[in-house]
Image 1 (cartoon, rainbow, N blue to C red):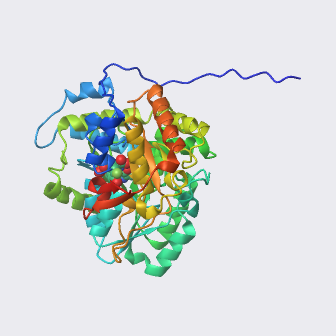
Image 2 (image 1 turned 45 degrees about the vertical axis):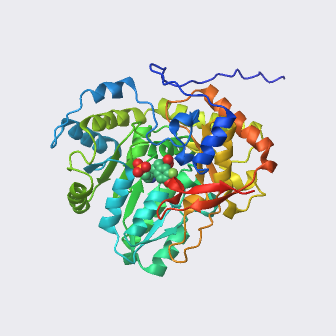
Image 3 (image 1 turned 120 degrees about the vertical axis):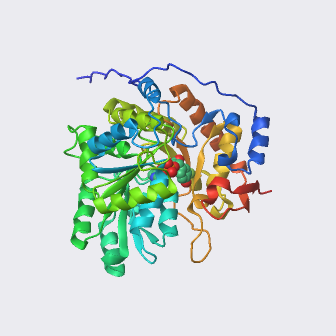
Length: 464
Ligand code: P61
């Protein structure tokens, strides 16, 4: 019997556009010049020279009308703003943490938690590194050890939970350095540098069990936790009928504390969260925040920013919202697949990560293939992306040599609720065009290197 053809039913975003911001189209000649002036570093481009800005999803989101309306309700009192109390109650409700300190963004919280928990000579174990997280851990005197599963370092491996921790590796580390020297386990979900890859609840529970056995603390970089929660719901047995809000609460319940760059999940332009269930750590953080950020009821934020965060938190747990967000990333991935372009699989939560080693195999890693590719995509179309390879990995703090990460990637990141499917098509076609002409592309040399987080301000020249 002939099989009945299934009818295709498309999905669309659960919102419509109310305000628009015009963007500038430029010529290739203009972009060649702009890229050269920016030292072949997309972070150094002027935003007005960018057509479609896929550098990051951090603080680049479109707020809802409800969030904008909330901005008018900002209580800008120096102390005890009512927006703070509303935000605090939502942190309890959604993340399940009793103690909260506002921060102006994620790295402020990373700074403070590193200073509180790390003693010089300690270790921190994590599921792959993140640039700012690792830097703050190192500045506080720790050595960072990556204990992510090996599959995470292979772009074509399709493991469903590439953000998982390798339990054996973690236990070996504890046995080697001693539990007392492990300041904490620093777990991010999903893992940004691995391609937006989630960890499973099963893995999280196993990490918790081990941490409990040795009395080691667990801290959570919950910056894009909603994407991780979404992947648990759609990929992990037993969670398909649970709401994202319930999954989020369960995830957080295994940690001693967490930090969030609110510029992602919460769909705001600025903000951060520090939250814990330890009164002792809370007291220390609340005291430090007045030194580095501002009073403990605003932490470097305006009242209106805290209101937008509290409202964004209520929107972030919506299944339709996150489905559309991840769906847009999947759409871009599927378009790139049609052109045979190599990128990290499975498709992650916030971005597509092009595999620059496979894209430009003729460029050795110390001629910066991912940096080169990001510059070429910009020159082709004005689409701005980000290097996530050898430049981002920095230098070994002991030897001073480049770190040579296995992953040499270009991140094409989608801000939330900002671009349309047509923008995604233009992006995919531009990457395809660069791919077609890839053999002619030459690498770069670094001509200026700042001491910290060199990828932000480093400058390059084209090799002849
Ligand atoms: C980003 F090129 N992310 O992905 P802050 N944890 C995690 C993040 O993704 C994160 C922070 C902590 C950015 C901005 C950025 O190497 C870079 O609010 C998982 O940015 O301070 C930030 O939060 C820090 C871009 C940060 C970078 C560092 O685009």
